[in-house]
Each structure stands twice: as structure tokens, then as C-alpha cells.
Image (cartoon, rainbow, N blue to C red):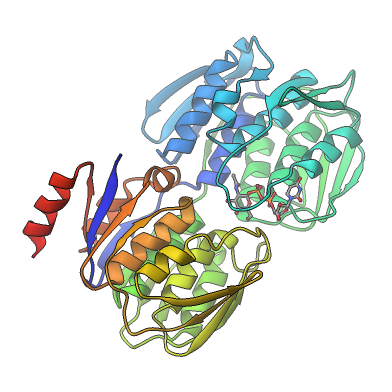
Length: 430
Ligand code: UD1
């Protein structure tokens, strides 16, 4: 079992390059099977979730050619099965995007009910409501979601809750439905826009992505395209917060600063300096940080995927802060781990009340999920002494070369897989 071992205390300094957005890439890869011509996708992050989904796409018979670590060609003309195996679904929730893609293209799909990071109950009722509204018959039996339709017909769909997954899944199916679909109360996240842009580059008729009303005129066929995925706003935010926690000076490159506004606003509130360039942001945090309040909200609000990283910096900011989680109810599982590093955090319902301490102290902790895992690494980088983070396979689901990128900024961090390697690292850094 691999772990990260970290000697904290070094301010991160330098430049780091951000990769393609994992959550956009997952949906775009699924959507790529909707064309019968070869689709080329670039700026793909080379992370575990992406590789699992490519396996699922191969599994239904599409041709998947990995040109290099960040480029893939997919051809959906050879698809022979409409059933996505539980093996894939249990590893990544987002393979449910194949439901919308297969249903749109073939009017038939069978996908196992999803698993994924355990950050709270994650129903998919809104996805299914959308498919049903488009005219599909949807059944759940033996752990499988089976959706089928003679024809999909455009319709008016109101989402009761803002859902990234439901918006994208319905948008994909509606892209190849007959007539016009309107999705109201749609999610506005940058990756929703990216998926719409991708589908449009294949000939879809989607307007309004990025607002809360998306209008789709269905088309019969989608064609080949070459597309580059947007930068990952969460990876970027994670490095920005790592800079802050270590009192560093980091320029985060290959980003869209507009997508980082909520993250930037919180860094300014705690007293860091953030300089924006066309495609980069520089975070400098020399002074002690101040307390603040944050509530997670759908985009353009503060992202729930940055909530644990935010809590980590507030844990060493002066005064008492609150973090309110309004999207997923089980996203404070890292609190016990952070407490072991010296944090003072009390969780009441969906609010974490954080009283800042002067510093964290290194400890052995476990990553409970992807983003909380990254947050614990940030805490380790800021802590006095040695931190060992277990269960880093969660982190590898979404961060490419995480430890290498951090090390290039001056962090003392290594990926290890035995006690002997931990001892070797400890001797080296002491
Ligand atoms: C996506 C992201 C995830 C991020 C989340 C919120 C991917 C692969 N994952 O997850 O990293 O944390 O957006 O930004 O892109 N809900 C329902 N019924 C549904 C669907 C959702 O009640 O059918 C609820 C969820 O329980 C949650 C809220 O809606 O409370 C938002 O979830 P959603 O936006 O759908 O998250 P995901 O797409 O799963």
C-alpha cells in the first residue's frame, strides 16, 4: 500500500503547471462515444479515474487509442454492447455518464448503480427523472439501471436541485433526441460548459451552458472533432491553498483565473496576496492568516471540492472560522485526522467550527476521500515534523504526479510503500 511521507515546514516557492480538468474529462470521454468517427481529446489528465473510464469505454467495444499520456483517440463506431460492467462503476461513479451517452446514441443503455467517493448519499434520481422526461423507460433491477426508448423526444425539464452530473447526463441524451429540450435550474460549473462546447464541436446544438437554462436542439448524428479539455480548477485551487498553508509564493500556470474566483476571494479574505495573469495566478502568503466564513455552493459559489483544503488553511489561521458544507452531508470525515495533527475543530451538523492553532504537528493519517486526502497532504506540508498519509490511492484518482509537482516547489515529500522507505526518508531529511 503506497503512502506519502512528508517533512513539513518548507514554504512552497516556484511555478507549477496545472493539467486538464478531471471532471470535465470524464464526461467528455463518455460523450466521445456518441460519434461514429474518430474523436481526438487533448489535455487529458493522466489520473486513475480517467484510465478506469477508458477501460469501461473499451469494454463496450469502442476503439481507444492512447496517443500519449494526455491525448486519446476514441471511435465509437465499433460499439457492440450497451452494458457497462459493475467493475468500472464501483471504481468511478462518473461512468454513469455512459448512461446518457449510450441512451442518446442507441436509445438503450444498462449501467450498474454507481459507487465513488463516500462523501454522503449520492442519489441519481435527477438523472433518471431527466431520461424519463425524454421518453425513456428506466428500471432499476439487480443493481443495474436499464434505460430504453423507441425515440427520445425533446422536452422541458426542471431540476429540483442543481446537479452537475444530472445536467451533463441529460444534456448528452438530449443532444441526440428529436426536437428541443430545455433544462432549467441547470448546473453552471465550468465543466458543464466544457462538455457542451465539446458536444457542439461534434455538431450538437446546445446553447446556454454556463447559465441556469440550457437549450438543446437534438441532432441525428455527431461527427469527429479535436478538442482540448479546460484546466482543472480544483487542482489549481489545491496548489493555491498549499502555497498559502506553507506561507509560500507559487505561480499556478495554465489556469483560467475566472474559474478560480471563489478560491481567490477566500485567499484574499484570509490575508494572502493573489495576482492574476491571463492564464496564471500567483499566490503569496507571507503574513499570518485571518479567520473567515465559507459556505460551499454550486458554481460560481465556493466549490465543495475545495472545502477540506479550505478547512486546513483555516485550522492555522488566527481566530475562529466556520465552514458550512451545503452540497454533501458527509464531507467532514477528515476532521478526526486533522485533529490528530493538532487542529481544533468541532463539527455541528453541516458546520465545522475551527479555532485556529499556531501550527500543525506531523502525524500518521489516512486519506478518507480524494479531496480530503489532498487537504491532509497540505496540512502535512505546513506541519512541524513528519506526516505519513495512508490510502493515497484516493488522491491518485484525481491528481497527476502530485508529489512530483509539490517537490518541484520545494516540498519534502515522497511516495513510499514500506516502513523501511519511511525510515530512509526520515533519516535523509533529519
Ligand atoms: C460532481 C463532481 C464532484 C463535485 C460535485 C459538486 C464529477 C465527476 N464529480 O459530482 O467532484 O463535488 O459535482 O460540485 O464531476 N443530487 C440529487 N439527485 C441527483 C443528483 C444529485 O439529489 O440525481 C444531489 C447530491 O446528493 C448533492 C447535489 O445534488 O447534494 C449536487 O450533486 P452533483 O452536482 O450531482 O454532484 P456530482 O455530479 O455527483
